[in-house]
Length: 159
Image (cartoon, rainbow, N blue to C red; front, side, top):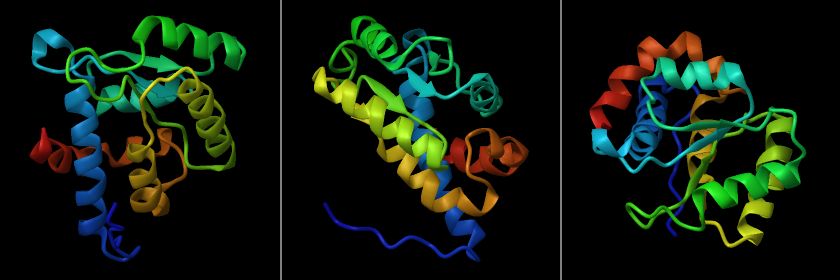
């Protein structure tokens, strides 16, 4: 796979374009079937992350890590509910979008590795793109909320 050169911190337009593309593609896949999407769920850490995605007009399933379950139970639930691949487009069955801080990285690796051990196809690239492009704005999904109005036009350009 070709390594893309990422824009610098000062190039806000390029960073927002990159983030908007990743979020737009995720929003298309997340959209319910009746609205032309693939109903691909997104797994985030907590309720505030879900609120942020909903503010960006994500309308499909958004699952939470922090629901009082241990990782084993969460992974078993996700595997049983969503399977190995998305039945609509044959793509990944789940988009993992943990925060891009230390805890989020640990969760991304831990949950991602466990899901992949079940044979699930998971999208981890969306988080990587956001980590690189939106780091100056914050280190969490929730920290994107103040930037929603600026990001929406970039997201809408893809979706």
